[in-house]
Length: 294
Image 1 (cartoon, rainbow, N blue to C red):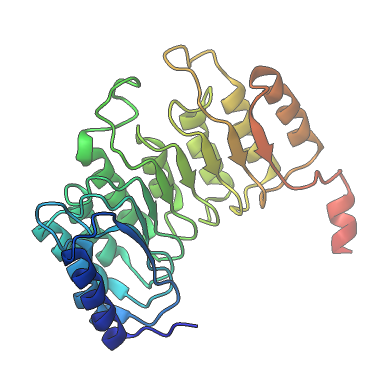
Image 2 (cartoon, rainbow, N blue to C red):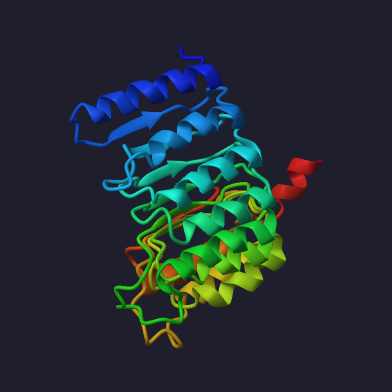
């Protein structure tokens, strides 16, 4: 197993830069997950994410989950990207790095202009809170003036299509902002404490499905059955969705209450969208939950 700390990151960066200088043209996939790089090692890491002002990053994929980067590490990476855009870097995983709202705000400044080819971003298990998530979403919109109110067929939409906001404390405000972007095709909002009120608030944004999102994860949000039914009925309601054809193919709602009435709502939904796959918990019949508590 690797145990790459700041000193190891410095050595690795020099090797990668040397290899790049020797004529290698193909960008590499670099997985550093679960290594104690910390913010100190981000100085060295910065030299390879935007090493070449002409050709951009030496990397195509950078996996940094559980590397103890913190807000200071994100500031260093963002500053490097702003100095020399990370052209060519398509996937960035920053999951579980103790990034807060402050770090999200800093990263958003660079996200708007310095990661032009980024199409997958993972921010899961960072306590970004709702304002930090809104800041990230605003950067996505700013990248190419993308938004749910812009033309669905527009080619202006941001190239970033996959966003993982699992367990980021985004709450309803952040979830609504994410659902209103016009570029995402995969959105994960698992375990964000949306609750019943949250499901009711986002339901109108899913009326008739969604114009861009193909895979949507709303699991683990502890919504009650009535709220789940409201959301399912909204997706099934196409009366107000004549301006777009829903692209939604997978809806994950496990970890929310699902009983017989929700199953009836799902059956009605399947009549409208037969190709839509809805992942849910095993239906709980009336009385079963009370018996389990006893």
